[in-house]
Image (cartoon, rainbow, N blue to C red; front, side, top):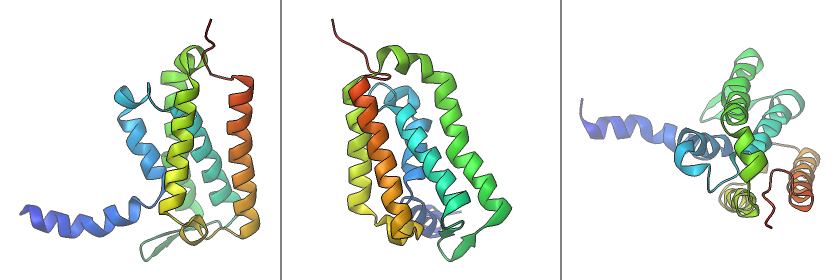
Length: 159
C-alpha cells in the first residue's frame, strides 16, 4: 500500500470532517494532555454537546457528511459518541481542574476557536440550520460564555 493511495482515499474524508466543529473539538480532547492548560475544554465540549442536541433532536435532525445523509438511530449514536462522550470524559478528567484552575484566557481561547470556525465555515450551509435555530444557538453560546466570564464560574480568581 502506497502513501499516495492512502492520501487519495482519506483526502475527501479529511476535507469533509475538518468542516465540523466537533472534529476540531475532538482533536483538542484527544490532545488533552497538551491543550487543557490553554483551552477551556469543559466549556468547548459543553457547547459542542448542546449543539449536538439541537442538531440531532430539534433542527434539522440530519447531518450531511459528503454525499451521505445521516438520520435516525445512526445520527443518535454519532451524537452520543462524538458530542457527549468527549464532554463526559472532560468532566471526569478535568472537571476539578477547571473548577479550581480555569482562567479567563482559557475561555477566551474557546471564543477565538469559535470565531475562527465561524470565519472559515458557514454554519447555515454546513449544518443546514434554519435561521431561527442558528440565532438561538448563537444567543445560547454567547450567553453561556458571557455568564461564565461575568460570574467567574470555573475561573481562577487572583489574590
